[in-house]
Length: 518
Image (tube, rainbow, N blue to C red; front, side, top):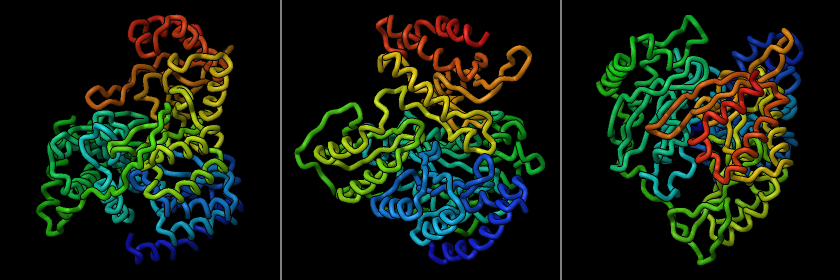
């Protein structure tokens, strides 16, 4: 990142401190402060007694050098809690101002960008987490995601941005970063080109993306990002903040075809401009030098890389909230291993990549006590209403209670799938494209509102099979763990895994759910 730009951002930190002090002293209201603080990647937490800070980690990639800096920051300022987010960033939580202010400055001093982490700005650029090391991928999209992330930062101070601008890159039809339904998504093809999707997004009024281009040269991606901004500047809704997202333009312009035409018109304008946004021909060369040493390892959390003899280790702390001491020990170990790095995934998993078999064994040991060991334990949850100001329900508490209940009932590992939980309709937990998802809501009991989550089923994130799912009804918070245990026991008794069982017994699943919905 350009040092002059970083210095410019640092010069704005005193203003952030001034307004943050005013907020915590009661001189600035919550809405005004939130509208200001998001530019700096920070929000006040629920209750207004502490703050969070979001560290941008472009494409979810964190090198050993950056991990070393983050570990030092966590230790020096005694950060109480951290969270792996579904946008592939690290959030630091429960921060008082005496820690928040120096953390922000130290992050920028070490090229860890916080600016634009919230608010009406380009958010962290997302990427398939194992790009470059994953067997079967079409090609390595990581270099392009990192170039896009750098370019997105040049738009942070641009006029008339959407309320969020999320850009994603997928390397296969697994569609891990949901590139086909982001504000702008680049989807790899087997021939080394990208298809481009635009104006998608989850939450209120969800939309799958519109395919606006096919088989484009990857070196042209920056033109498409600039065209996205220009399209929103011309056609975005600035009168209704709730509709200031790109997905609303599909209907505003009369449908997907009209939207694609409008986008491509702006794309032509970008190409007609004198600016050259083409990436160099040698931009994405193979930079991987490490090879295996003959040591091997097998474990459910181990993933063989496409580089012979190298492995990745999956580490998914429950709810994406790692034990701080485990995380610090992991950072220290990664810093000892040549070419090892951490990749954050959109499902709150962290992958430690570029390991020999012997090195992978060491990573497994450090993360063993804190890692999910079944698909269900690796379920996804947003940070939840106990922390998030706009959250409706405590999604993290629901996930912890559910995992404990399933463990106590000894449900087999294959009897329940990964579920996705969002504390509110915003779908930060991506519940809308999950086979089983929940979103925070309410349910009337004896005529009075009670805390509940709405059950969403039949969602799918796979490219070509994307589905937003459907809602079955609301279940009380306290009943959801019991519901999941009953489903797990029913599946286990069948002798099938959940996916096979559900395909043949969706009506049975719905009948079980209805007992808790009624």
